[in-house]
Amino acid sequence: MEKRPVARRVFQAPIHFYRKAISPHLPPSCRFAPTCSAYALEAIEKHGVLRGSWLAARRISRCHPFHAGGYDPVPPVRGGKQSDGEKPT
Image 1 (tube, one colour):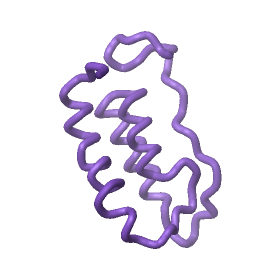
Image 2: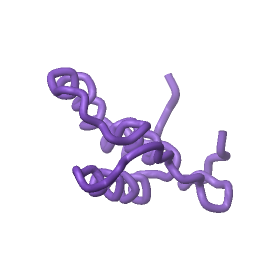
Image 3: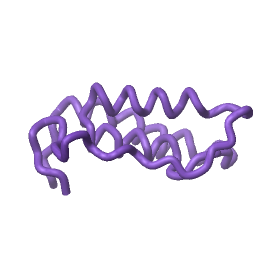
Image 4: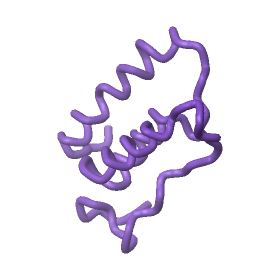
């Protein structure tokens, strides 16, 4: 198992819970690709807890009937470095 910083695991745990326990009981209604939960997990993984959470919150705030949705990938890491000093993959 890959070691990830504890803060990332703590922030990603509720998202994993939502995806496994809550999301299957809701009708599919996502207007974005990737889904907001997948986006949040990837953003936290790529950008770290602070910036990744901010990006996820911005994405979720755009999830409403007046936004067209569509393809919205996680932006690349600034400067080509991971937020915690890891090399990008």
